[in-house]
Figure (tube, rainbow, N blue to C red):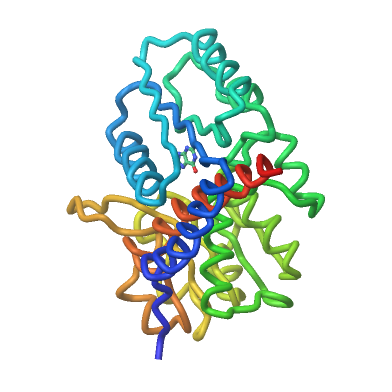
Length: 282
Ligand code: GUN
């Protein structure tokens, strides 16, 4: 029997606990606060930002939504970030990606105070992760580890194969799995004989943005399959990077799309915002 790794149920359980933590913090005079900056009017980004806002509010986290027009200059954006860096009542700062053309993404990421970089994208936090030092970790890989932990899946010694080498998912996922004693293989769009590599995986994490690219013949029977994709197929249906109908009967455990990794990503953002806020308690 295949285990469906239910991200929605897991996130809800984690958020019940987190809500209690927020209540305790507030009683100690600290209201966790998350600032989310959205530049431009990308519809997908607008939905992600709205979901973050709703989840924060439901937990009692103060949520600032800063909507800037797509004509915003890099200097203006850096100015807004500098203000938030200096505001001691703000715990986490997140700039929704992608940014409009003409704005240097790395310059923006590096302008966020590493202490408030709740995405874990600042090179200081990336370096801490790869050195296995404590720090903020990118939300999606953090959420995947939390989902595996919830289902008591220990990755130690597993052959973990990651498909996709993005800064947001693939690379930090590799570091986290390595820190948890998995044997990690990174694959990507230039990898030769991809199916041979994925078939060796005890744990397969797929984050490519290519609809249903992982088919049953690419998966070892009994493998744990984590699908980070949120894609539209040719028919316009929301699907993952994994062909769920084909792969689910082969896999030992698998995340659905939607309701798998997505809810865990937002939960992770909230957990780490609250963790940063805890530093303000004396
Ligand atoms: N765009 C897609 N995923 C993310 C994310 O995790 N953080 C930010 N800031 N932007 C994103």
